[in-house]
Length: 245
Length: 388
Image (cartoon, rainbow over all chains, first blue to last red; front, side, top):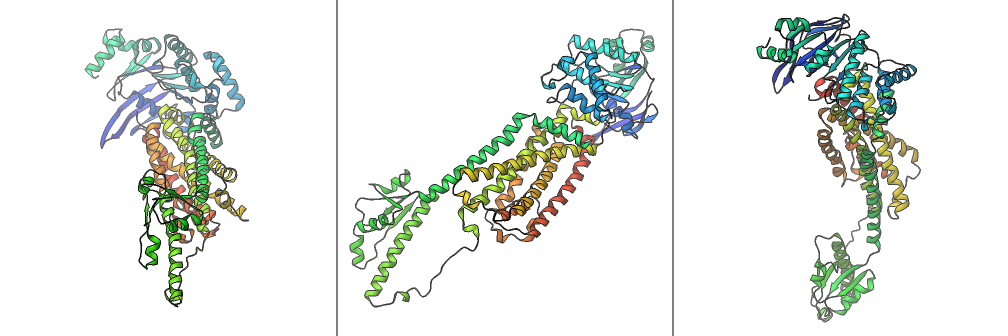
């Protein structure tokens, strides 16, 4: 379970204080897939960065399974997996296996455990052929598969995806969507930020909409369709932004 | 965990072959080339004859004085000044045709020496010619005094003799002391630079830093692992530069080779050298870690770090005209400057414990302070994540 209580994040820029995220209150149940929607610069990435412990909120608190994220970050890091799309964050001069093994050690996995887990993930994502090749020569889709494998390497309960299908071809994007479904079947809690409304509609049971740092909606898709008397998420999103609520 | 990070960073950097070739190996080869040519230049200075242009109608006795010396090569020319301007002669002499008869008439004929003021060789040739002419002038004066029954010491009540007290009078050692600190210290910094840019600014640019910060690993461990990797490259590059320098002086040079003697102080030299080199690498690595953290991209980091190389070379130029005897103890408290000063001392065979202790202490304190600054920056998302 994820709880976000009154979280605000300020950034100082040229002697000005800018609120990237303002007074966000969210509760996400275990095993739920939530779509995070918002324009560029709305505050989605800042919110996900705070959940991933990289940034500290200026105000408010965040909890995963009742543990305060910023008071016990090391404990939380064991429970979450994060993937920021577009930038896969892999070391080009290391092989896919070396990239995965480097991170596995941080999660306290033994050499034996790492070996088994890497083989398992390579089989799951069809990476066996290029597991021992350097990442620098990989296509975008291949890199994304390695990055996803790294995200779920330690079998986290909570997974944060920030626009993970950005720049992927249709096959890789479909593979990714199938992965999300299978992770849901495993009972993982997933926050999924995306610009593609069809993707959100297809994968998520509920959505959070953010506009200019403020949350303008949180609830199930069904409830949203009912409120807006439409099932076109794209239209609903645009009209909510225009209304600002 | 630090070892795990260190090992990965080392592998990652070593696989970047282009950077290693261009920032470590090619500079080493260039340094070897510089040493080789400097030696050849010194050797040719010792053996080459000095060419002097004169007119055909110059007095024969003066020409004979020059020819008798053996080092001077006299070139007859219609226009001696033009010969100097076109590089055919190092100096030109204007000698009156009636020089000998004027001398006999007890007049003072004038010999003019023309030089190329932009050429050091031309200046040296002019000085050499003047010494020859002065010797002959003294001989004539003595002869005339004898004829007048006057003791020659009447006009030379005392003599002044200039003699050097230190080894610095040895040109070869001066050259070694000029090249060695520069090559070795540039070697250390050359090794640090690309790895520091890649490990911090490069990781920010590629977003691997963000992935690392999300993993359950302490930031101190990350910083130390990365810092040690960068320092290792500095130490290895510095040692390779030293080795290339020593081997090239030993096997490629003749004049410089004579100056490279440790005279039984091998252990002290190696200990002082290795400790200083290691501390310099640790300090330099931390300075570049900080600069790399300030930058958002490798390109931006490169523009910062190239400036620091210039600053690091400043002590080298400040020390250029200084003798090891002029170095006071307090200069060994100034970081970087003390490394150049200590290397100069070691090369001149001066083994001073106080200088070594001051250098080690000063570099260590400076590194600790900079580590604290680097750590503070590494804990702030503004520096560690960069823009975006």
